[in-house]
Image (cartoon, rainbow, N blue to C red):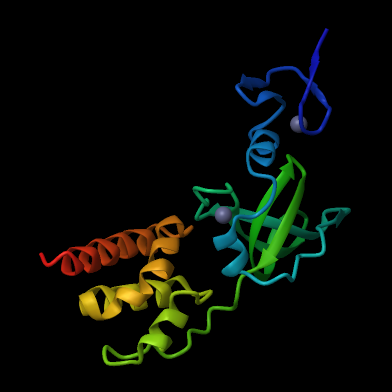
Length: 190
Ligand SMILES: [Zn+2]
Ligand SMILES: [Zn+2]
């Protein structure tokens, strides 16, 4: 007698059991733990999906690579490729991918790697706060850095900076943590 996966209903042969239930795979467990993208992953990607992947006689499209796993929702960054005989040939774009089952997923397109110009150290507070919500992790990191340097003058940006403490990108999280701590220290007169 096999148990059934709590998420996809398939039979669990060598699955995992924990406080959430019995699952056939990490993907299924993850989907029950966080059923969808988190707020940060949503705001750093666009609603455009890969439209599914297919392969016929070894020719089709597929998702490859697994980078930048989100610590909140467990989604990963993958590249959508045209494949010939299962070999990736032409990249079609990068997506944030959230698996709902081992072979099913939701996907959201990441912006192309054309970076807008970085605001300077003297830029308006509003411009820098906008930058914290940029789809480009380099931009979020850059703006967090300037705001941290401003200390007390950047007090109004604290809520946005605190959101970045859960950013999918580790460098952004580190930079935001530093900025939040610096601003709070300056505020308390330290
Ligand atoms: Zn399952
Ligand atoms: Zn996420």
